[in-house]
Image (cartoon, rainbow, N blue to C red; front, side, top):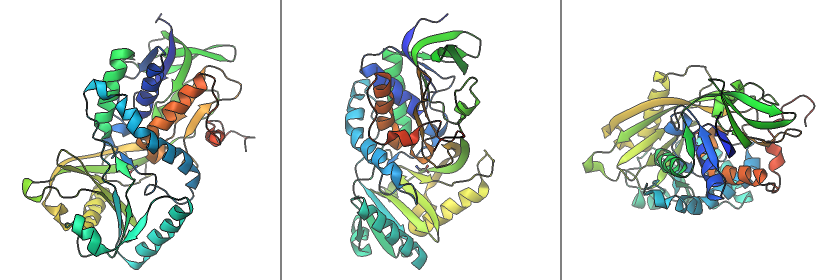
Length: 377
Ligand code: GLY
């Protein structure tokens, strides 16, 4: 029998780690259970803290949470400074480029939506853009600037969180199979070897694997949305390839290039729902082709890494976040889809607020994990 903790977190991706750290820094005892932390979607993620340029059609309802979370980043990262691990937070802003007329129209439409929500996005002249980013090629025909869309390096952030949780909480390298209940209260997590980790609060934050847990009080309708993503090294002669994150709409396909402080560039990402968890040759081809159209020098870079991970998607692409009515001691935090890194500070604060009996932010009930159950609105 494990010793009792205030909070048991199931899953050590960026969301689970963030919740664990938030609970620890508010004075709770925490154990995080994961056989292999930060090796799933977190390992692939580009780390764009970009509420404006990551806004997608019919996902405006997410803005309140994404904007709030982005604003929490500086303080959240400052709380980890003592680990000595630099999380690669950069505030150099994002440029979004269009290639053909349809891309220009789509980005102008998006700009109108962004303006309605007071997001700081401006159309800028290509001449001006090329002054700061001379590697942008001749195929770009329009540019928009999102100066407040930033980035963090998710691998480094996860390393800092792991160090912090390992030092001030407990890391248990195991898999969770389900929950222990006392009536309608969850009293802990049941590990695969049958032992129980007793906890006052149990948090489900293990991404897609959450749906397989035994004894969930509601169905978690998660689906894998695969993303192929590349890491490229910029040779010394081409440094810096870019200073901003550069996104593009290239004849209808979205692509992004995120320059890191270590001289690499992250190039992503496909969105595949074809059930294939291996790297897609067609996906890699499309990413390189489109990135090269935006930044021709991409062809001169060294290909360091190609990988694929699945994002945990939900039917409405919004997270499953919060408690389940009628069940105490359980908080769900999964289904973050494209926004796991962006939403980590806000999701962590919200989950710990709920455990402490505080109300969540206005409107958060729309993320109720049981909203897809029969009979729910
Ligand atoms: N947030 C970027 C992606 O999921 O590709």
